[in-house]
Amino acid sequence: MKKINILPLMLLAFMAQCAFGQIQNAFPGKKTRILFLLDGSGSMVAEMGKTNRWAVSVTLISRMVDSLRAVENCEVGLRVFGHGKPITMRDCYDTKLVVPFAPNNHKQFVSQLRQVKPLGFTSITQSLLATAKDFPADKQSRNIIILITDGIEECPGDPCAVSAELQRKGIILQPFIIGLGTDGEKFKQTYSCAGRYYNAQTEDEFKKIIGVIVSQTLNNTSVQFNLLDNQNQPRESDIPITIYDANSGQILENLVHTMNGKGIPDTLYLDPMRKYDIVVHTLPNVVKKNVELIPGRHNVLPFETPMGTLALKVGGITKYGRLQAIVRQNGKMETLFAQDFQTNKKYLTGKYDLELLTLPRILIPGIQLQQNKTYTVEIPAPGQLQLTVGRDIVASIFVIRDNKMEWVSDIDGSRTSQLITMQPGEYKAVYRAKSETRTLYSKTIDFKITTGSNTVLTL
Figure 1 (spheres, one colour):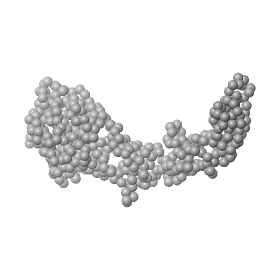
Figure 2 (tube, helix red, strand yellow):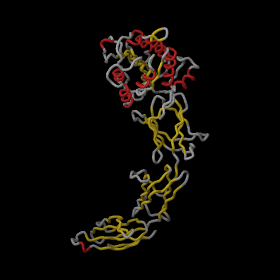
Figure 3 (cartoon, helix red, strand yellow):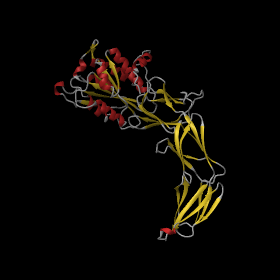
Figure 4 (tube, one colour):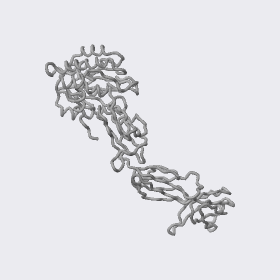
């Protein structure tokens, strides 16, 4: 899916209000935890505007954390790396959880942040690894990392691989990464695979970006699923849809697609912090993977789902109990569905192969289902073979097609009386006594099955 730079779109709406104005959590009853992962390496004292990157970071993060004080079900934490050892020691494990997650820890956060002094080496991979233990074990919470750095990894390791693994395990959602006063294109190439990357060259840009990020973190985004017919119109509906987290595979939502009162696909709200795998349970399924939503906008997701109907019928008065047909996509062996006779079922338009589980089985290859049309398969009502076995035998039933004997069914030679439902036609029973040791005592009897009638046969 093509990635779209959401920053210009979000800033237009966001700049109308104060970046650190009133914030609300759009996820009632669900805890949101935001971990600020802050670069404390020596390069953070580099100039930014009238001051330096570190001072700007401390000021803006402190204001943002203070603005989160009144947000319900939102906790903050702080991990700093590169601040404990001088740069000459090149310590790749210089990372520390300075402020653990806890309710109402905002004053402690700001106090501890102001005591940190930038000093050492950039160790992002180890810091990301360490965050796995920073978040409490709560599968229902939304765990967010905001990584703020002015440098590229200086230690062995792959931040992108670590981020992907943390997301796959469901520990965190996709991180945000802010590069301060950096070569934006180089940083983007390095960090885009680890999360959503933003570049801040100035204090004002940094302020707007961090405001936008927190706004995205705490707000839901609207989504509309358009199930399109072959005229590219969203006319299909009443179909189950499953929404998965693309990284962890966790099932997030099960729903049935609905049209609202205006005949438009209904709107739902999803967390824009996740990537999604979406399965529309048509036959066969229609799947979109790694779907990213544009935060703060109404997202319309199209799915090509033109459908036709397959009707299976038995003529006359049927004596079948439950008769089914195996439906496969044309040329494929996997069973798509086992459809009962006397029912109608929708499938995506296209070619299908049918195997009717009658006796004998009937194969119908390459039927074509078309948009909003019904393809009907009708077979004659069966007859019945009323079979009497005089002694234990070995026996099979055959039908002749194209001058060849085709096996239909074996006969249970140990049962003296049995009733077998079969399609109309002419058949042969080939058998011999089970106790007989000579092949020449094999016998063949021809019989005929007629719709709605019993055929009596004694072996």
